[in-house]
Image (cartoon, rainbow, N blue to C red; front, side, top):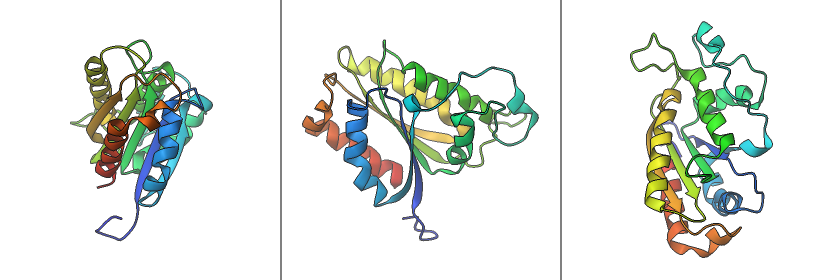
Length: 196
């Protein structure tokens, strides 16, 4: 609850996995009761939506509010992104990076950029939090965590000025996150931080 006005916080959960039976969805289902008891939650499943790549057309720069000229699901989500208190991103690591569908989502936050502002942002709120919880099958978890942290900082243009990242290693088997108590604890702590 928001202590100032007694309302629930608004949380956007962005799931960037294409695997409905994978770990991103398993963790989403696991966290849902905890999140929904404390926040108004909007779920956005990038892999099932029409999120086109940024055209770099600068059509969004002709207005002085976040907008995009493309008529797709990302453009429809812009008001939710702008008014939420926090965003939780759930995604796999693909080739040491964000999966392509999440990179397209990140690139489209260019629609919040305003070069006439000192902080280059026309976001309505600039005090928001973003948490990234990622899953890696193999490879160096510390390197992947650094990649996630670096990419999460790019969401600052959309008003997300605080970020936290976690990468669950050895998480290639679908649903295996539910058997990892340390990672589940980290997910709970991230949820609490996002909604604090």
